[in-house]
Image 1: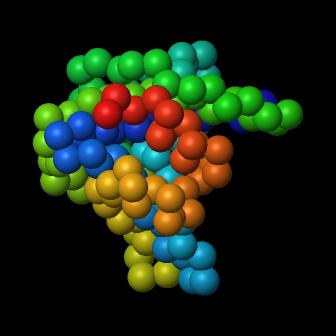
Image 2: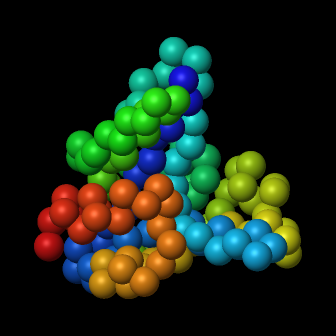
Length: 134
């Protein structure tokens, strides 16, 4: 079974969420920073590790978010609140794979803009709108 942890990084003062825009040939979509669990790793530890590896941010406090279960996977998303829209850079494996045909672009998106973008997984969009403190 595939297990994935992600972090919804939210700046309440600017009503923005940090997402990774993925551009690959004819596809364009957005995802929440995160990734797969390592052997014997908890969802929370994986979320913290992935955020650190992908954007160099060390999360102080994670709030419970949502769990999305499917037949072959479980995805758990947490919420991290930040004071302002920090400038982060893609790091780690994503930075190594980043090129003209396979782009990873960090982007602060307003909550209102979520309606217009292709956020994956699709059900996460409504969850974000419901759980963020506004």
